[in-house]
Each structure stands twice: as C-alpha cells, then as structure tokens.
Image (cartoon, rainbow, N blue to C red; front, side, top):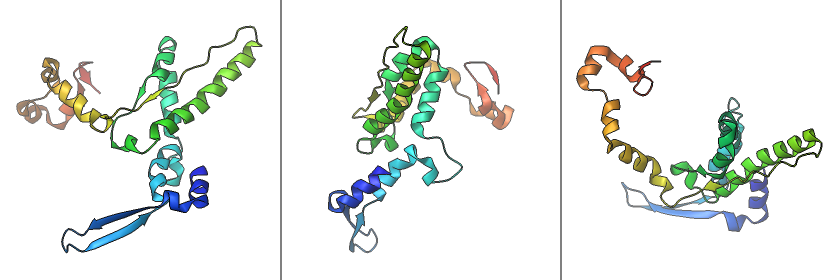
Length: 180
C-alpha cells in the first residue's frame, strides 16, 4: 500500500498529535495519530484489511452500479458522482475515488478499442467525483427537503396502520404499491 510507504518515508509529515481533556477528570492528554489517519478511509478502497469477507472496493461497487444503468445515461453518471456523508469527508477522498474509478474505466475503453480493431475510436469517459462543502450534511438536508414535500406524507404510515398491520407495514413500498 503506497500510503504506508509515504508514511514511512516522512513520518513527521503524516503523524499528527491530538490533544484533549478528559471530560470527567479534566486531565489533559495527547496521543499520536499515524497510520490511523489513512487506514480509516483505506477500508473503502481495500475492504479486505477490515474483514476477508468484504473484497469489493467502493470504486468497483460504483462502477458496477453505473454499468447497470441504461447505456445512454452512463457517461452522465460517471461525470456526476456526488459524495455525501461523514465518511466522505476524509482529506482528498474524492480525488482518490475519482482516480480509482478512472483506473477501472480507462482499461475498459482501451479493450473496447482493441476489440474494434482501430476502425472506430471510442471517446474517453470523463470521471468526476463531486466534493461539496455541505456534503457532511447532505443526507440530513435531503431528508429535510423530502419531509417538506406533500408526497412525503403519502409515504408515511400512521400509528394506527402500524398497530393494524404490525412491522410488515414497513416492508410496503408506497411507490410500487405492494409488499416486498
């Protein structure tokens, strides 16, 4: 992993000291944070370091989702990958994700060109991962916008419905009108 190599070459650059105060005693404390700074986000790119059952990295999952979309929408989807949530706030996470997705997409284009034998040249696919200043609050913001629409109340279940149908009411989909 290249992050370990970077850390080992210049540890002073990558080790940060965290200082805090214990809430109960008020005693000050400090700890050095080294490898932990990049091991957190690294789980998204090498999930097997956490658990061997998880082997599909986030860039591959995103690529598979986009490849599952209709063919005429894929380029637009690759151009507009939007991050939201706290785990995406790691420094340079969006750059790394963009680079890793590009490493999956570019060889596919080259293989397609080779398959065509040079008769037609495939256009390169632009991959753009959008990082926004409010991405930490995007999930809450989206939920609050949804909750302010009249359609939201059509999707809600009342206490009376829950008491009548039980927990199975949570498995009904208001969009598709049925149980799943």
